[in-house]
Image (cartoon, rainbow, N blue to C red; front, side, top):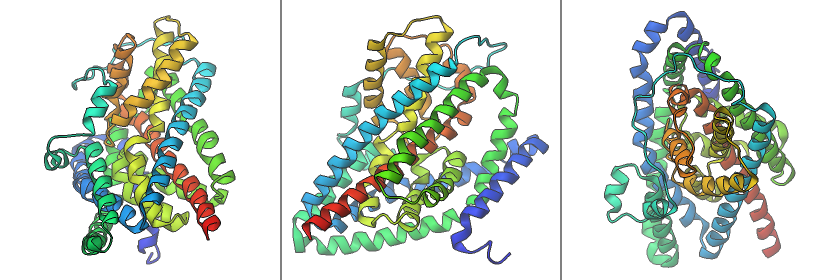
Length: 406
């Protein structure tokens, strides 16, 4: 029993909390729904530190690298790899959706109604404007990750560029980063309880019957995510990134426990950083720079989501989808997913925007939104898994660059 409570065995305690939550959701649904507040507090504690951790991690990663040319090289590799992985994920998802045809033969009886607000279309100019706020403090207080990320990158580059004059700032950042991650480690110790509450609520609220209405669509989404994981992430990580298959799968399992519980790539960031550096051996200066960046703009789960949704809606209404529209959908999805918030349920607005851009009906968003958490578990897991895979590949290529220079 003492071994179970060791710090390195937190993921085992989380798994136990996950299992207990499933049992509670079925056995005591009333209690599970009433105690949802426990899970909400847990999420709020994590979200409270998302911006501070993001700023510290990016600044620490940049200042720890020591040279601007290395940062430019890593940054360009990361962005290029993210785009390639997103498009590959979209293509794989389209193949799975074409085989399953989720929209054929599906009808809804007494469809659930989504009571939240649905936003309008997200344009590239909206995404671009989001990078440049007129008040960075206000942007941080509003948890706007994109401008915070850009500001952190610029400040980190400036600290490196001024050399010795920036050393006191770097030392302060290193100390602040240690403090922030210690606070996060304290919060993460409450994860088993928080995860248990969140899963119990999900099971009690949605139950096994939710799969009856849109089960084929959900199956398509999950199978697409599984296919993307193995084809786009696992194989390149092993063949190009040099990861041990068993180690990689074990590390992915630890991350999946958090992503499926919190459905938040931002909330999972501390776990992603820890697993990447300690389990997979990625250098901290690379992980601290690429993972927060990927957490913001690398949304391969969005590729699965958008592709399956497009096929589903087109088939449901008997609409055709020529190849030219599919290609344009892939390009637009790549752009608007840069605005995807790393918070639970943020994809609902983007899904609506995606359909609106192409003039497709949005009526099915209501029923989908009612069950979105079950889908978001898979999408968020793929988002974070993409970050880890890209991180491994970049680390491997960087080690070759260092060897050639040495």
